[in-house]
Length: 311
Image (cartoon, rainbow, N blue to C red; front, side, top):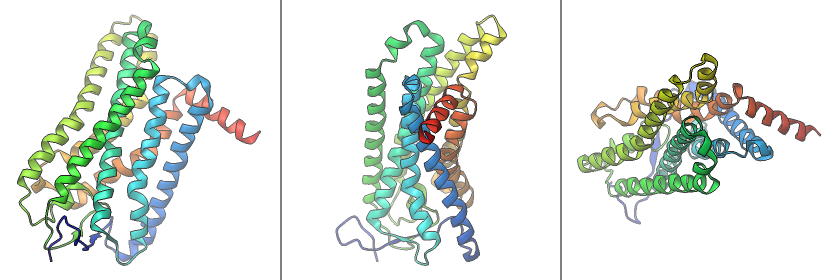
């Protein structure tokens, strides 16, 4: 039975999940349920702390609060369905549900990467051009960067989903993954996917590489500027403002590049599943801790939020 992109398509996909071992389903449910709750609470606290403390109403924290919001959306697209499937025997997702999940997953993931690039630009201006910081990083420009990030990401997702909707699935409908990602779904198609792969690789390279190169360029400029600072304490102070952001960038882009920038023939179910868990679940959960543990401003904002709740 063929699964095509028309109104008669009723065939469901089966999401194999993290593990097919029946004994592992409930322990995995418990682990990922806790990780999801930590992600929601941690990122939610970051957003509330930033919005409740006027001293955190700066461009860097504007982007951080939106990054936390995107991380909540990002994980919510994937994890609740994964948790339901861990306790279900069918583990199915409808054809349309699969496309919708794929669309929003890519939209929020790409918005994350553009927000990380915006934060790198913010650090670049703050360190390399501090006297013009308020002019360059004005509220209007920050809002335009946010809107541009969302627009580009959603257009990218729309193109990818339109390409996927043109494919036929006439053999196995078992997706060897815990959500509807591009590579494992492409592996199931009985259509010629060579042209889709070329478009996907080229367009993905453009969309993901643009913010990544922006981050690399920004930090190259930052390093050159910081090395010119005569005092060691001055250099450390400048670099310390970038540490949290760089940590998140390494976690996020390291796993994304490993998963997506390889031919379909090199796709590995187990290895790619582990790498995908890193940037879809672990990194969004760690972001609040990375940005708050060594950040005096965020610690102060969280204490102020705690005091306001207890008062």
